[in-house]
Amino acid sequence: SFVEAAKSKEASRVAKRGLDLIGAAAGLVILAILTPLIIPAIWFDSGRPIFFRQRRVGRGGERFELVKFRTMTQNAEGDGYPQWASRRDPRVTRVGRVLRRTRLDELPNVLNVLRGEMSLVGPRPERPEFVVQLEREIPFYRIRLLVRPGLTGWAQVSHPYGDSVDGAREKLEYDLYYMKHRSLWFDLSILSRTIWTVVGLKGR
Image (cartoon, rainbow, N blue to C red; front, top):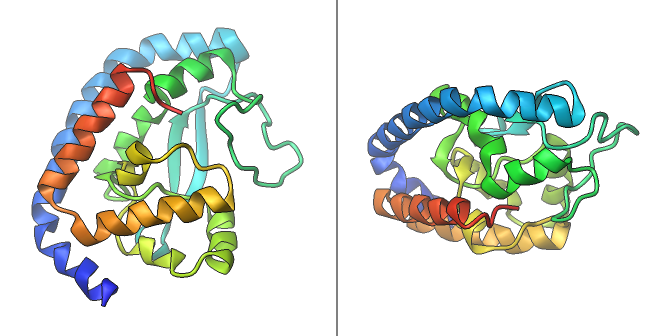
């Protein structure tokens, strides 16, 4: 079965965790260097808060708090209802656009990697409200929760930004392919493609 095939890849979990720790350590160095530049940029552009915290669903359905640099206006969901973020979302601030294009907004996620809540590579961590919706509308959607979510992933580097149920359905195909074929070399390949995405300012 697919689940058995995906679980068979767990034999490489020690090497994957080692790669996560090495990558997270390097990310912490970059975070320490860039944070003194990013904080005042966000402050002067749109005020406080600097960081954005949001609940996400991790491996096995466990929830954790994701920390990012804030890229949207204050009270972006003022009505209290979760909203999909689109590629040209009008709620994104001027500095936020730069952070998103370079994916620097996700740099604080290295703390989640260190805590073991995320991996460097894996399916994108989704919000609990959207997981409930997508489980109802997309068959086998919950299978992606067999592995830790990632800072980047095969779906993230191979598919345009998903801002709808249809987009999530298409990205699920990439997530399932990754889960079935994941390996240390596959992770390194995805990480190298992510670096080119950042250098080429091709982030969402």
